[in-house]
Length: 433
View 1 (cartoon, rainbow, N blue to C red):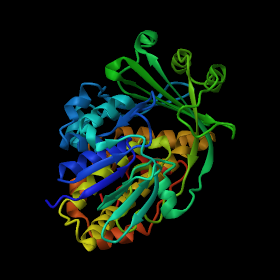
View 2: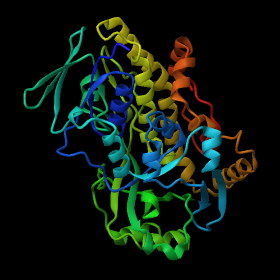
View 3: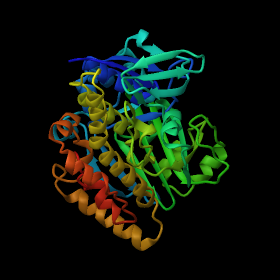
View 4: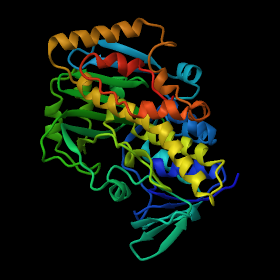
């Protein structure tokens, strides 16, 4: 391993995973984080098997399991009646079928484990990047205090509002989706009377949906609810919402949902914005990762998981590179993009389709969707449909990729819509897997 110097801009889940995977293949990594301290919002996160596999490879799975809940499945129900529409087995089935566990975690717990995987001296806080200059034989990053740092590669993992993406592509455009997201955490003792199983609970309702699951070893119940909203909502994870409005928004849901919603004392409200896939991520020795490259709607719970996949593929592509050779570095970054962009774009598009699938209200479309879900539930889960998503193996993707095939796939985008997208949501194979 030649091992070069990498600057990872952003100390979130994607950035710290990239630091850990790059260090594992011999790179010297510095994480530049603009905040005064590394912290995550009080919210849950689903680390599906495709992402957990990366943490298994890093030796972090046991540390995560100690803080996580490992759900036994995903149950999709009707919001109005509570009737079961679909069950996806997880737990031991996920470990056997997809090759890795499926975790529900508090975001802060995941961040703590990742921080422990990167030396403290490799993380620079209060580091705001103002300029990036690719000199050909290296990259220079300028911070807001005038400090300059040199590296062989810059990885922009600086989030949905990425300044480095703006440097490469110009100001980002986004569209308000017309939907807002409520979220809250409930102490276990306050919902003990509801006997909520350790699964991922999902409710599909007309113009609204709810996803809820246990985190922090079962100490907290994490709730996410999506409803139509107006432009007064902001795209911020820290904006608070009105509790009375929360209860009114879910008044039409079955009693179980209404009861746990009533236990949220301090709800947060986040405006959901949508962004089109980028035509490219990489220029010279600079590349994008995670939300900076492919921000996506929340309906497949894959935003962080795709960033984690990015990190694993990036490290594998850079592992054999001589950092002094510009042709090798740029080819490796292009290879990373060629492997990752088709898959991330596919997940983006399917997440966008989920906005329709979750919230159908025309009775004919609802009936067709529900029939498709029940039919899928009766199929053999070992050969059905989430294997393309949860069974993704970053190492295999690198070993088996074909540059020509990936280039062709990258030129094609998928945009399923309506009830017909349900089959894609469960079972679509992905190019470059």
